[in-house]
Image 1: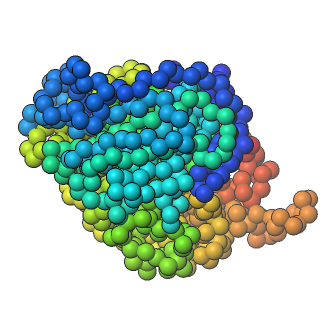
Image 2 (image 1 turned 90 degrees about the horizontal axis):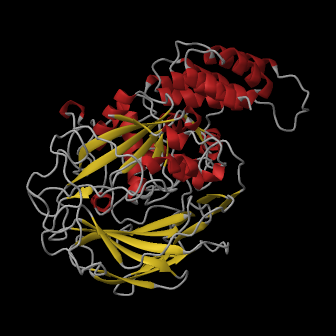
Image 3 (image 1 turned 30 degrees about the horizontal axis):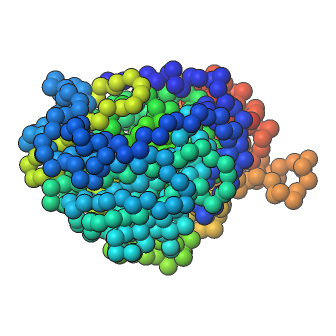
Length: 618
């Protein structure tokens, strides 16, 4: 079933800070990879609701409203009536019967004083928990808030000063911030050590005025503290004509069916306006607000867009935080954003990589060699740019370029995903999954029953077999191998937020020869993401040197490259993404040529191409 969320998406009269892409653009501030677009705070403080307990598919028995960590030992009635037709959310669950304890429990601690540690009791049987700090405003605030510190019952500090040492983690964001246990190798135990954990929230040390802040802790549990499977519900959002609904449905099931032994239950498709087709770092939070109309919790929101730009230029996916939020829609952390290329192996790698971030995983090694994930069983690379496919972690799904697309995951990575709040859990062998929690707002979408023909292979990170490394094909023969790896791989928003510039990385690996890049862009045997990036990079390689006089005419080679890019941009035989890359290349080489190209493409049959050409000419 397809649902339109046009009333949310088309509120064009509101400012950008209130959720549309048409308003003013705020100043950007960065701190250790935490990216913030400053907005005007126009919000109403929400009331505190301390001590409330919400459980996954359950209503707690009377008299247990504040019990938080202890309720859930008896069988309870579901809070949501299952759809027995099999066509709605939860319609295919229940095999094995209702779970005897709630798989997912929220302890809502209400309004919390910033900087003061709060005790949270974590009982035996807990796989993991996710702490969410949120400013109590409507619409969502753009001021920073997050998790400053988490320490355990034995005094161990899991994260402090909004980070985990040695990583590029930043556990704060715009209006909402998260952190989880486990996210480190030391904590990736099954089950989690029970006891009192202490959580401190803060404003990211920016010292900005903020609204009241609340803290909630979502705890994943089973009867024996071990993973027994679960159901993943997906809300898929398509911005304009970014991708076909049929392909997105099949791509999501292919990527996630059997991933870390989870089953895809429902995929509900929603439509967003075409104005959301282009996303940069400042529009990303407002785009995520558009998920407010979705229903069903927990759920993964996946937003498909046509193109990334700004600091996200060159990216194929962006996840706002590791971890993000699966238990509330419409926040600045409520989903992942992707560009898909209609290549099953590539798109599977993109979707799984971003889900890894969403549930709390970092890159195995960052582009900055001093930083890596905090796990004990993932490889480390001395220099990603220098070694590329020779890195020991190159086959891992969380390698910063997506690696060899084989999708390998380690036991600790798998444990972290399984301990997250992204799915509806099963608490015992042979048991059934909990029903979805009701959503707080918006229309109720109906999901689709799983299509066995669209399912991927089961198993931990199982996919489509080992794909060739992105630089091992004929199209890459004339390029330095490291440049080919970057062109054909996955570049995600976490690297961009950490300060990595995709096209600067490409130049550093020797990928700055315009003629070679044009050859890749023309090559029908090259992956479409490589063609798109190569053409965008060719325009940058042909751009006038900054020190040259403004009125200087382009050199003959630059003029030739520009003409080639213009011809490719208007060629309807090229894949859409290759044309979009050529448009980017023209805009990088000559703003005047970009304006002329936009006029030529205004009536192009592919409306996405016409719209992106107009945007590139601004």
